[in-house]
Image: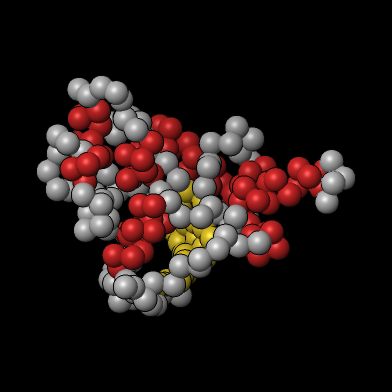
Length: 205
Ligand SMILES: [Zn+2]
């Protein structure tokens, strides 16, 4: 069993809306009408605020798609949160190291060794059929795990992450693996807020 404090239920509309406000989601979304930023997370650690968005470059040698998202986030944060630290995906490190104890990477990376870099993963995808699966990309793309990589000792240090969407199975696995009672993870139920706003727009709630 684990001490990890993961809420058992999805948060309600009001709790989620408060978190969306903390994350500046309206401002980020307004500057990102194409919806390229799918998720955003904010971390409080060592009296500093760190931010990350979801995504991994589809080609590590040409990281333009990810850079574009990061640019949108940075342009928002310049006004919204001075001294913000933006955490980028470190393509020289694996993002799997936090989950490998829980999920056998061989299931997802049959060609690879125990830990996988994004470059190795992309090379394997080029030679495999069917092409890359969503869950495989998520090994590298989740904003929560980018932030965890920025913590010196994620199994002991005290830190808090607020994130737009409920964590995926890989992030939950990372949280369980860390088993750190000083790691607080709060997430919004973004889909519920979206549905609620649409119903409200129709005058139904
Ligand atoms: Zn995730």
